[in-house]
Length: 133
Image 1 (spheres, rainbow, N blue to C red):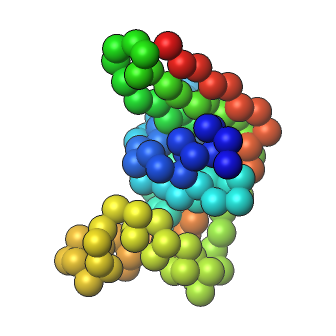
Image 2: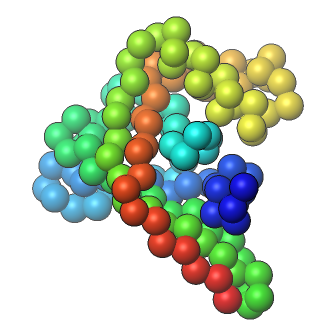
């Protein structure tokens, strides 16, 4: 596995940028899963990012770490987002995402997040940029 893939697989926060109704960027930090070259984000259909994606499914994202060289590394990307609404598939992916952040899905917060997730954003990246210092 290359450095970019390993990095995206292990990091915890991705900043997702969508375009709002006034054509301004809307940036949101999200929990995510990177698998098979795609990025998956669980959310709710009433969220601003979903409203934005329904009008324009182009996204940008950034994942980065470090403030001092030589430990500065990041990955940015641009891609197309699909909204997955098939509930069995949504719950399977949402559980996989939440297991990255919780030791158990029996945790009260994990249960609440799973209950509130009714869609998945699937990002198919078309362009990556990386940096390190």
